[in-house]
Length: 504
Image 1 (tube, rainbow, N blue to C red):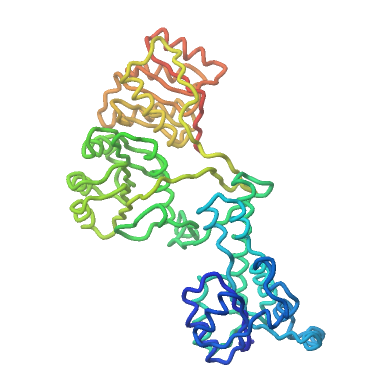
Image 2 (image 1 turned 180 degrees about the vertical axis):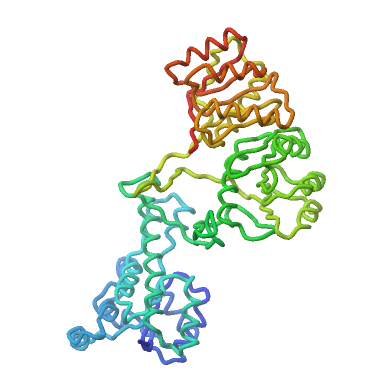
C-alpha cells in the first residue's frame, strides 16, 4: 500500500546532500518540523519550516540535551493510522501525524578517535536521535525513517520517482537500515565503556559490508565487512575476492614482523617463500627460489617500495596480488601491463587486538598472537652463533604464520623448506625436508623451528641426520629432556622460547 508523505521531522548533524531532499519536500507541500541548526539550514534554502519548540511549547533545554523528547513529537510518529483510538488521541491532544523522520546520530565514534576527554565523548552519546529512529522504525507501516546520510540518495530517488509516495516495502527497507544504524551505534558505545575488552556478550559491529563475487567456493555467499581504504590504496586490478582477502590478511600479518628488506610469497594463507636480503631484488629472488611451484598464482608482499628492476623480475611469473608500501612510477608501468593483477599500496599496519571464529552454536574469541617468544633459553650443546641466532629468530616468525602442525627450515635468512597443516609434527618435518630437497637446498647448517614442543626426540634426530644444527621450539613436553640430551650429544643448538604458536 502506498502512502503519501505529508509531514516530516528533520533534525540532522550532517547536512551534506540534504539540500535536494528539502527542496523536493517543499515543492510537494510537505509540512516540515525541525530544530536548531537544521531549521536554519532549511529556512536558508527558502523552504518553510515549523520549529519543534512551537509544536511542543517547550524550548530546547539542558544545553540541547532535550529537544525532541516530547509526546507531541513521539505521538505523531508512533500513532497507528489504522487504530481509531490512536487517531482520537492525536486529535484530543492536538498532535500532528509525522510521516517521515530524517535524523542521524551524533558522531560518537569519530569523537572517540579524535579525543580522550571523557566529557566531550559522553556528550556525543545521542539520546533523542536514537529514540526517534526506534519510534519511526517501530511504526514503519505508517512512517518512513531515514537514519543516516548514506540513505539520503535512496530517499531522494523515492521522492522523485513516486512523487513523495512510499510502499510498505520501501518503509520496511528504510526501517531495517535504521535499526542497523542504532545497533552499530550501541555497540560502539558499549565497547567504549568496556575499554574495548570482551564483555558478557559477544559484540561486534563493522559497517560498510562489501559483497564478494562468492565465498570460499562458488556455491557460497561471501561478504567482507570493513574499510579496505583505511589500509590500502588499490592501484590496479580486479576486485578482491573472499579468498584474496584471507590471503592478503595472512600476508600483511607476516610481513609486519620484519624490519630488514623482506619479500614473501603466500599461498592459501601459508608462507611458501620468504627471504631477507640487502636489496629488494635479492630478497625477491631468494623468496621465489624457496618454492617456485607454489608461488604460481600466489600473493606477494614486501615491506619496501617496489623498484623497476624488481618489478620486471616479478612480472615473469603469474601472481594474483602484490602488496607493498609503495611503487616507483616506472615499476607501476611494468606491473600494470596485465589488467587483472591486483596491486595494493599498504598505508598502515593491520592491527587486530582479538581473533575470533564461529564454532558450534557460538563464537570463540582470543587475543591476537602477538610476540614471538617469552624467553631465549639455550639448553642444547652450545650457544647459538650470531648467524644461527638470526636464522632461528627468522624461522620462529615464519613458523608462527604456518598452519599447525608446522615446521620451518631456514638458512641465511631464507625459507628453504616447510611443512604445515600436518597431523603429526614428524610428518611436518618430513614434508619440510622433502620440499628443501625438491629445490636442491643444502640443509647443512640450517635452523629448524617448530610451532609446538617435540613429544619425542625423533624430530631432532631426523634434523641432525640432514645436517640441521640449530633448533627452536617452545618446550613444555614431559619428555623435553630427551630432545635436549640428543642435542647435547650431537653438538646441536636448542632454544626454548616458552611460547607456543598453534595456528588452526
